[in-house]
Structure formats: C-alpha cells, structure tokens
Image (cartoon, rainbow, N blue to C red; front, side, top):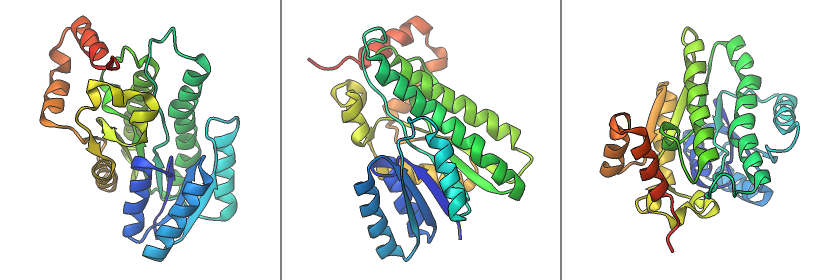
Length: 259
C-alpha cells in the first residue's frame, strides 16, 4: 500500500492532497505545525477510508527539524512511497522594508526544508528504485516578483531544483513532479496579503489544484501548471516575449495592495 508523506497538510492544497490520496486507499504521514488540525484530519480520513494516518507535529523552519522528521519516520518503520513537499508561505512588501526574520523563515521553509527532505528521502527511493516526489512550486517561479522578491525567488529555486533532480533520476523508476499553481483560494492569500491584490481576482480552488498535481505526480510528469484562467495562461505565455523591464513593472503593479 502506498504511503504519502505530505508537509503543510493541515490546510489548503496539502489537506486536499491528503484527502485525494486517502480516497485511493493510501496511508499517510501528515506534517504541519498545527497539531489540532492534523489530528482532526487524521480522524476524518481514517474514519472515511479505513486507512492509517500518522501525525507528526513539526515546525520545519526550526533547526534540525527536517532531520528529526526523517528520523521519526524511519523509527516508525513506515516506508514512504510518495514525498509531497507542499509547506510554504509568502509575504508582500518591498524587500528592503520587510521584516528580515520573516523572510528568513520563508527561505528556511520554502527552500531549505524542501531541499533537505528531498536529499534525505531520495537515497531510500534509489535503493528500492521506486518512488514519487511532488514539489509544490508556483507560477511565480516563472518570473521575478517585485513586491514579493523572496517568495518568487524561492519558487524559482524549487522549480529549478525539481527539474534538475528529475533529469538526474531519469534512468530510474523515480519521478519528480514540479507543480506550479496560480492564485489559489487557500489561507495563503490572506496570510501573504495577496488577497488584497489584483493577482487574486481570479482564484482556483485548492481541490482542483491538488487533483491536477496529484494526477501529474502519478503520471510522472515533470512540470504541471494548475488553476489558471484563460487570461492568466495568456499572460504566462507572453512572458518570454515581454521585455524584462515591462514585465517587472507589470508584476509590481499587479501586486500593489488595494487602497
């Protein structure tokens, strides 16, 4: 039976990914800071689908947290078949004005935790010559992001890392899928402040984004975009043709909070 480890599983896309995997009869290891939300999800999924859900309450920005997570999983004897790195957050504002500690936490979660978990679990996958990884990036990875400089840059890192590892593992039975959602109706918008900008005028549901990502992971796709309207798709298609200064001004304007 396939077991999926999902970070950031207490809400939003991560929670919906857990629901999808459970609905297919898969066991879960769900990870987040919110123990109450995780335990409620555990009860709901175990009751609905007769599966096993293991809860790990962990702040992945804390020192040694990723190593502790891996060690705890190994101690349980549970084999992880799918690694889903979903945890992440953003925040709006000019780079030089934003709180440094907050952006440092963003880098630790969006980049460091994801990278270390890949590095910890991939050797186990290689030994078995099987396994699937889903890294949740963003369409923000496709361009620089004035007013969200660190967030956009962190997601560019995730997409680049995911594709590079996918190529390195291309002669194995291990796949790495890079999921790039557009604006999605989750707690992310409110937490980051993006719900007050025009970028969030059209949002996808977290259920739809999760389903797209999960299907792409199962199929072994390398890259998949999710939750985009026609106009958003057109904008992304135009990025390579748009002069960089024009693109930067456009992105900056779209991320200005409404008065």
